[in-house]
Image 1 (cartoon, rainbow, N blue to C red):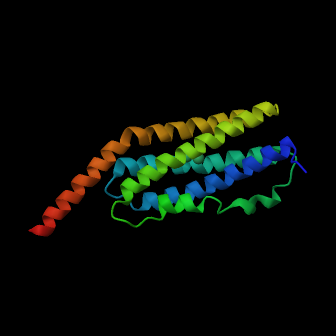
Image 2: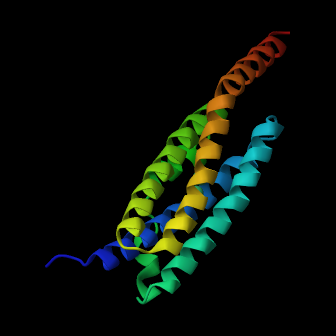
Length: 170
Ligand code: MG
Ligand code: FE
């Protein structure tokens, strides 16, 4: 039996909600370990606030649809693998690996919202479409920031590693 389009949109919104909860967890884990990278830390903290608000906005969309949100928990943990790549690494180069993983994750979010926007548009769910467009813009901005800053983050990491190595030799 095929799922109705409205139910499908509802499922995708729930998936996006789980994605944002996962994003909040991994961004929070990442921000904790960035004391030497204040600019990156500040941008991640800003995106944590955006991410929390995105989850709230998606909840609003889910509530506006005439379906029970009772299975909300079913999909949490779905993105755990990506989460570990971003927030779970304790490697010495975690700032670079985290930057790379975040850059990939933002594009994963972008793709999800593009699909949601198309689905909402197709169903005439204009309010949901506009909410998703607003969220999409925040993801695009975060992806762009990472794109613009990954070079500097990588170079800063290397020069820190270099001076730590020199200090070790003295
Ligand atoms: Mg997000
Ligand atoms: Fe994001």
